[in-house]
Length: 492
Image 1: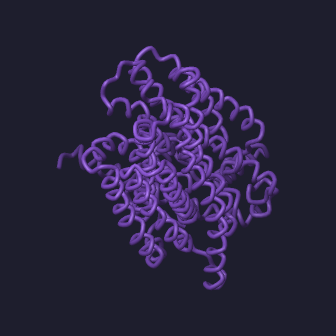
Image 2: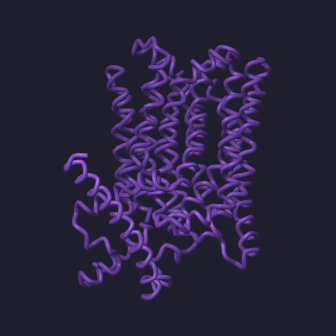
Image 3: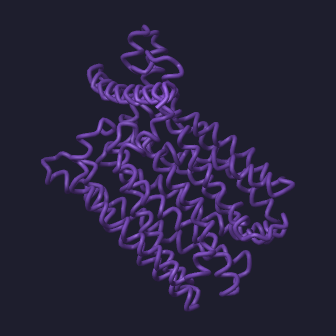
């Protein structure tokens, strides 16, 4: 190995060690916070009124819904995109939809740690304002290349609420009351891709594909009008640092509040920006849960690219009514949000009481067991009823079961990552990377898979993979997760 390579390796090792040291310091700073009565401070987001907390949750859910709404609103209009830009490749047409998810996965690598450096609130606001401009760019794109470019940029800015929304929930709610808030937050980004095609189908039919992007820009603007006056900073280290500066505290006091203030600028930036990838690569638990979440998200977006041809060509739906086929997903998501949130809190409290009143992140896994069972059921139902060309309601019911399982799985995974890891936004940002990259990749090979295996065979293959990923690993984490976390300096 060359001297330069050895030097680079030692430098990388040093940075990782520095990150681990800082994470230990972060834990120590939480102890210091207790000593100076931070736990009872009214500025602490945990001590806000229920009204203020739930206002923030609703605003964050709205911010999270808008980009996912825009990500899928163009799905029923893909034939119009192909016609407008003279595209003859199915893969290229699918790319105009799914390229959003490529940058949607890259964005959290930067946006999640930035929120832990400078606060969550302005990351939401600034990213949403950029999304307005990028959607207007999509609307007036003169060719397919510029459309792809603006869709890519929209995905990057739209990834902010996905990267840090769960962290905001974790900032405000204690573990035993976190499930309901997380369920409402998750409902935003999951309902967005359902509402989008319903509206997009009729907008495309009535006014043309460019008005889909204009409508998305207007929705982003509405979110800013609501969010800017109502959203408040929730991240404790940033609130305390700002408070210390307002009070004119000394540099030493500021470092007690936030030990990273003693680091150099570039070291400070590197440690924060590298944290999501460190979590993804060094924690097998984070990796496998993120992989399962990513698989589900990939299948979800794969459905979007097949719905248009299935319900238009097989069932004879027009461009407008074809968007209504997505309502089965919306019903499944809503049922799961209402049922799984209540069940998640009850299960966590019950298991905590059995454990002497002490809750652990692993107590989130029973909800994942149940939710994972609905995923293959929905995929088998959807695939084989579509292949048999049964009444159109049958595949829609299948998608409802799939959506129920997807949301019931997303909730405990998100809660586990927030509960288990010291930097919740970075852990969720790491999960968002795999989730979005698989959401980008699946639609690109979906048509070829279904051409080879048929709708029944293709969805049966996906259902089998869902069983392999969704059943054994949650059971293993339930029994072995605590001992694994005890060996890691990345977890609480």
